[in-house]
Length: 235
Image (tube, rainbow, N blue to C red; front, side, top):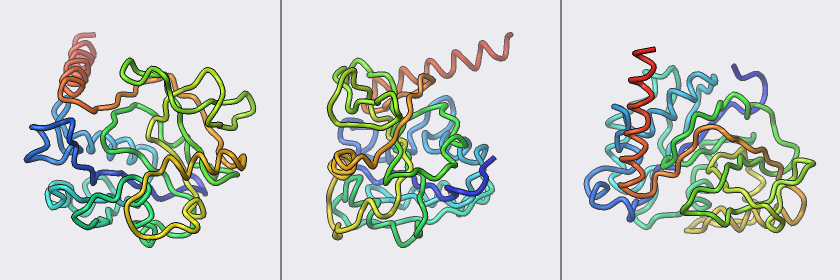
């Protein structure tokens, strides 16, 4: 369970999910189902196990469906706050910046709503020394070049080999967004700027992680998780 340290989490769930069409024409991507439950519910269950009690979810495309499905969070023993975004998507950086009043002044966990993982979120309960701490994973086939280099001392850099892929899981200080203004902007440039200043730490996770970017990847994950469930029931 979480001790003192990071206690709030944010799930990024406002994206349009263009590559997931036609599935996302009527359903927000985080509500698409795998192994009998929405993607975002897999995150909620993992966050509950880790001890998180306050959660912010940003909503945009078909956003009303998320509070209708999840409510106020009491089913998972937490309080969910919804950060409503304007019609134009704010991207990752802009969406987090828009939600900062709900996240407070302490570091917070961020996880992309369109990934699946069995990462143990309780491991991110410690407050990072720099402006950000990121979780890196093996490069999937569709992103073979990776994103960032993890040095032996735990610092993360934009350059260096071998590169790993940013999982979409991180702990961020609000100060990472100092000087930003309201509007649409990505998170990546802010992380790279902080890396240049030696303010980003990281860790490697070799367990289960999937980027659910296409209907094919969604179906593949569903098949794999159902196969695991069947194996567990028969073992």
